[in-house]
Length: 243
Image (cartoon, rainbow, N blue to C red; front, side, top):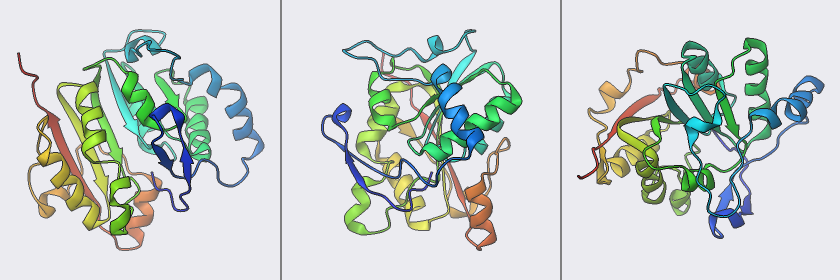
């Protein structure tokens, strides 16, 4: 996920918290526009009215072995490949950028996979309604770095969103993060290490240069590597809950 031209949008669903990021880019080609109109409504996740909780495992036609979550999936290369390799796992992807959603829809249609559900909006309201300990793995890959110091509070990995992730992640669940921005890498590592619900990420810049064995390269990552930027891959683990 990378919002290159962010603009603030008031979001009542988050109690007045603003969402900063792009929702639309270039006009969609006809095929992708058709998928947004026809396929997306069948697999989209909306936040229920009132206080009704969201049970991720109930979002799928067949009960999955586990549910994994990707926040800000960009063009969906990573999520789509992971879902195709693991048909017994349900995947929930959150992405407010419509063009990225449309790209993932194309992958879903071509492959015929039925284990992906999409929340085409800000992830935070959905996280707040998910049942506790219902996610077995979460990914936050290449989030917007918000490089200016006065904007660091907008970075996704921070105390409030780590609280959200800690609540929905099952004991022992992995939180995987990646970035090619050294300052953001250090920030994410420090934020997660300071949170009482997580262990890790272990290691340092040297070990973080090695991706996980099942890593799937994204379009953004290829551009970063071509430009000489070296990604870092961080993994933390949800600590067991007390009692």
